[in-house]
Image (tube, rainbow, N blue to C red; front, side, top):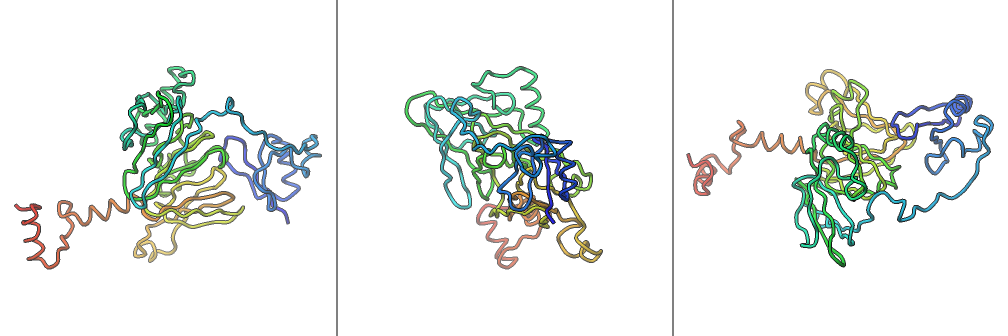
Length: 341
């Protein structure tokens, strides 16, 4: 039997699966929703689906989606390249007048004709009307909730020809380039994952509505929500794997390994198993569950895991020194100037 899923535009709350009769009733009450079933190429507007023409009273019109013009594009159309393997950075190429935004302290280098300005909030309105004071305050407040700085750095090409600015990852891992209009205009990411992006991209907040998910999902109650139609660059720890989940398909993941997912994916938590698995399995008490449809991105080395291992191995933090033999190891540290006293 065909199963339908619905989602309201601009919302991550998914309804379904519904059988055809229940789906027609939902379409009659919510004709502005998006819908999906097995066999459709992607999320479709309810009004454009033939099965719901009678329910909505609107005959579907099949037209190709319009190609956005330069005037209607909200984000700057930047070029870029990602350099490196383990310690990557992204180099953005700007045309005159174009801008890129980044987190404070992420810049690696820039050409002299690239002007650097620090702005209040996420910088999406820089050079585009400026926005009001309350818009900037609200934008800055959202950034604080996601663990970011109150300020964003905007890099604008003020000269002629091409100019470049580069942004470096804060710890070993992978830099991913994502075009938001290819992902429904919105991505839900772990906190602190945003590295840089085109001017016009908004960095907001996504709340976890379920209490258990917020407490034990590994990301807390607040995650980053990246919105817009331009390029964004997000950083993940270790290696990244991309999975596309079918409608209703569930993937169990370590709570720290969830890096990003489509807003149509539902995130929840479940217990790992019995008491023995919880106490001695080494995976904690809960696993994150991701249920499709949509894409998810998983990281192999969460920063919390790497920091925990470094803290455990550091002598200052109570960890054991693992030299090649206690005498030679201590002698080597004295000769190197480490822990001489």
